[in-house]
Length: 133
Image (cartoon, rainbow, N blue to C red; front, side, top):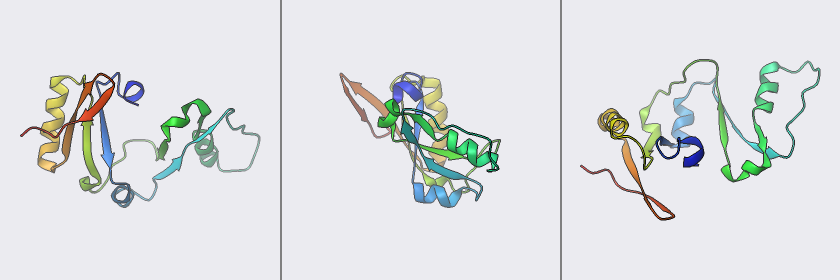
């Protein structure tokens, strides 16, 4: 997914402990497993709650994306905060991340004891190295 969502390996990926994350988020946050179909759901006139209808529509993708096995997080407008940084287990850095961005991430996460793992690509193999001290 690095080519799709991490700007051609220049981004980063945050790994969470799902159990800790669920405890650390507010009650107004929900997760939905994506559905992969040929067609998207159709919404007709209904008395159903508009936010539930929106969640339903936003939880579908074309079946060609099935390999993603994605979950979506739904929350109100604005930023989402979690109460415990221990729900973040690691941060993976793309192989093309800039030195400036890498330094910012490492400086921010160092005091929080969050492991940073830089990516190495060797032909068709991706590995993540332990952070150098």
